[in-house]
Length: 139
Ligand SMILES: CC(C)(COP(=O)(O)OP(=O)(O)OC[C@H]1O[C@@H](n2cnc3c(N)ncnc32)[C@H](O)[C@@H]1OP(=O)(O)O)[C@@H](O)C(=O)NCCC(=O)NCCS
Image (tube, rainbow, N blue to C red; front, top):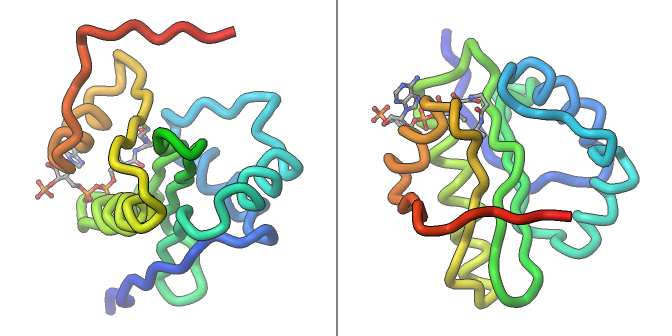
C-alpha cells in the first residue's frame, strides 16, 4: 500500500532527518556551513516557508525556502530515491513558493549545478525559467 503524502512546515528539530535525506539524494552538495546551527538560524529568519513531505512517519522529501525581504531562494530540494517521480517535489515547491508569495516575495531563485540534468528538467517542469544571461558570483 502506498501511504498518502502529507506536507508539514520544517521545524528546528528536523535537522538530523534532513541531513539523512540530503545524504541519500546523491546530488546535494553538503557543505561545512550546512550545520544544525545554520539551519536553526535560517528557520528563525524564515519560519514558515520550508517544508517536509511525509509518508506516514517517514520524511521522504523536503525543500528549504527563505527570503531576504527582496528575493526568495530555494535550497536543498530533495526526495528520497524510492519516492521520486510521484509529484512530491512539485508539491513541496508549490507550497514553498505559495508561502513566499504570501510574504510579499514575487521573484524566487534556485541555483542548479550544470551537470544535474534531472534537476534542470524538474525546475523547468515547475515553470522556473533558466536565466542563462546571468553568472553567479560568490565570496
Ligand atoms: C529533482 C528531484 C527533487 C525531483 O523530485 P520528484 O519528486 O521526483 O519530482 P516530481 O515527481 O515532482 O517531478 C515533477 C516533474 O519534474 C520532471 N522530472 C522529475 N524527475 C525527472 C526525471 N528523473 N527525469 C526527467 N524529468 C523529471 C518531470 O517533468 C516531472 O513531471 P511529470 O512526472 O509530470 O513528468 C529528485 O529527483 C531529487 O531529489 N534529486 C536529487 C536531489 C537534487 O538533485 N535536487 C535538486 C537540486 S537543484
